[in-house]
Length: 290
Image 1: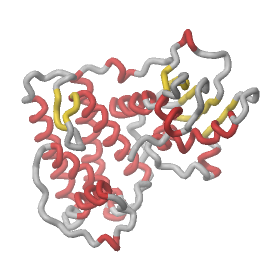
Image 2 (image 1 turned 135 degrees about the horizontal axis):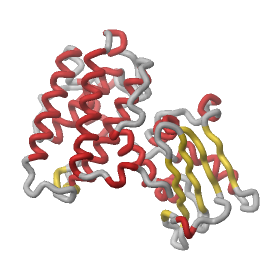
Image 3 (image 1 turned 120 degrees about the vertical axis):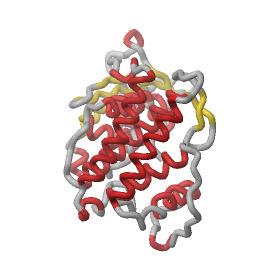
């Protein structure tokens, strides 16, 4: 199992990954022309500008600030289904009346507020409990890793929408890669739905390279497999590039598209009944975001 850089990140490095990713979104948002700000992203119903609005809402929520009352015309936003989706959409919609520059300025200010709040924690450690996005206390490092993954993923949403690739190997990208890699046992057990004794090998190439093995134990739980426990041949395997892997992990791709299939190599052990069908489930099953 190859080690990823983010596995050894200390608190200062994690803070830099989170803050740097947010500033990258803000700076990119300021640079966009009007038509780019309004360009549709892979997030249903959201433009590039809506992604910036969303991140401003999340940081407002984490800062403990209240939002103004706002009524959304839900018929205009059919993609927002469910209570949390509608809560999220409200945070975006209330900012649609604001100018592009004002949204980016708000995000800049919130980065400063949130950083000051974090630096004021006593004690300030990776394990210090803070309030999470869903209103439950979590260790600071968990919040920073989850928020960095979300912010970096949305940065890529904007970049793809306006055809400005970049930031694929930053600290934010490294944290995101680790979040995805650590989900491999969960993906195999819960999303693929593999039976006991199934093993899976994930290989990612490109700007960030990684390799992960997972298996299903006798109780049906997903577990990591270390070098000593690896079989000669996995039951199922996937090989793809870093950007495709990150998009699959964020649920951003239609896995039935031929262009996606060209970026993915699936393998299965022909000696195991049903292995080919399990392998075919991997691309869609990699998605771990809501």
